[in-house]
Length: 242
Image (cartoon, rainbow, N blue to C red; front, side):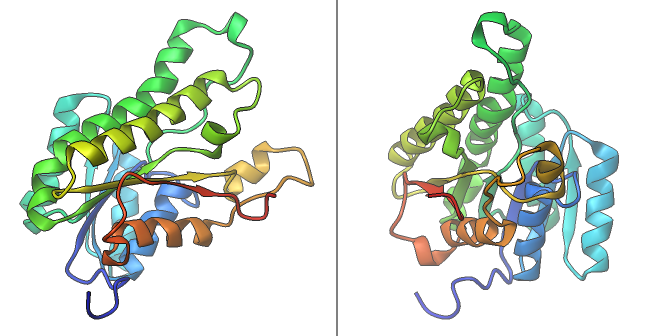
């Protein structure tokens, strides 16, 4: 390995779940853009993802928007096609799409809530990774998934979210073994990330957060040549939590 491993100049990075300004996907994509990456921005919200692409273009970043429900395999395949059509290659896939949407005791949980949590967190990561593998293999690229510290430290009443993120961790380790020598597959497992939405949603003034720049640095490391000897790892990120 020579040169700066965190210089993504000429590299193409696809980030999912980017629509909301100030949130994790937006922050991750912006960090890659600042490092020189050419970006593919994927989200279910077509209007918002187009706005993000215009925002990044104003910052001097090349950005291609693609929109649709990433729980649909055809939409996932289209996102990869958009990357290849615009930039001719794909070097890294970062599966941020997901989140905590189902919160409450398991006894009273509606199954549609269960299905949604598993679909947006686990199914999207599976479909996007599978669709991206051929192009990533050509580039010797990497997948970075988003698990959660809830996988390591499950809390009530978050059973479905914890289970979905545990699934992401297992998927990461399984795909890493299937694709060894072709595509590296790792994941981050952050605690609560300090974003405007997360801070507004938490009433505890003593809540502990991981900072967004700490998270983006870890993601970029796992997508970079600096982590070339690492695959199948789920990296816990605890920030100030002990």
